[in-house]
Length: 251
Ligand SMILES: CC(C)(COP(=O)(O)OP(=O)(O)OC[C@H]1O[C@@H](n2cnc3c(N)ncnc32)[C@H](O)[C@@H]1OP(=O)(O)O)[C@@H](O)C(=O)NCCC(=O)NCCS
Image 1 (cartoon, protein in one colour):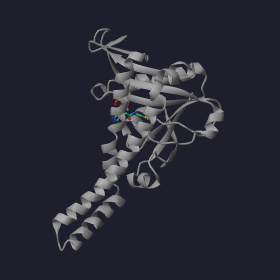
Image 2 (cartoon, rainbow, N blue to C red):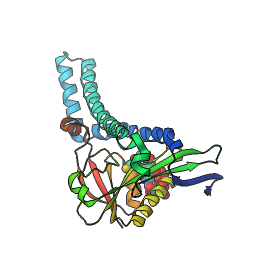
Image 3 (cartoon, rainbow, N blue to C red):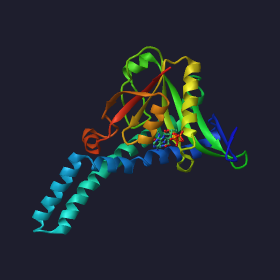
Image 4 (cartoon, helix red, strand yellow):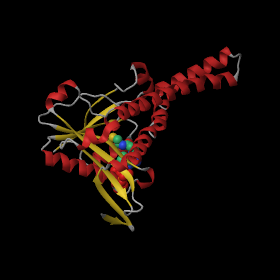
């Protein structure tokens, strides 16, 4: 264990006893994106224009009613919030019923997959405060699935040769951020991919996850593509204005 400010920190493999803490961390790390996504979307010039037009319509239809102007504007904001919420909740539910439903089977029984946690404390008071996963993505699968999802998307894999590692679920508990845990978890994922001989490590990040993008760029990842096919339907994705960025690091 490394020691920092009298606190014991360790990056170790996932154990079945971590499940509750890992699930809680996963849920928090996805839900926290809803408000940033909403504010980012609402501040886009198109949405500002629509909000003003709708409020104006409310004002006129209500016979110069400021209350109705406010009501119409709030309805528009509510719709945008709903879209952002649907995208992240949809992604979260999907992962909870797929890979996160049986971590043991999906990550620990296959030597090409890995699940690590950042733990703080000692044996008596230890707590999981960070996590990251890697799954092997074979070339033949690339062509059919492109199932990378660190963010909210369902993007296709980028060009290139060799197998890839697909990083997901990178998260650090709020109170433990900016202490290099995210960096260490990313390094662990990169080391694992090098050990396995993967040609690159890839992940998808949604556009509101600016902290994650900054961390990834600092770790040498580059953006290779982007798209707006999120887990919501086409209109929900369009209104939420969330894009999914494919980040890759060649090893
Ligand atoms: C992204 C996340 C994992 C970063 O974890 P962290 O432990 O705080 O990151 P680190 O302390 O290792 O940061 C390393 C560097 O990344 C960059 N960085 C990290 N968080 C940042 C933020 N919120 N804003 C800007 N830059 C950030 C900084 O350059 C930082 O170096 P510095 O602290 O010396 O400036 C964490 O914020 C998180 O869990 N976010 C929510 C979930 C998420 O978005 N996951 C990514 C899924 S793809």
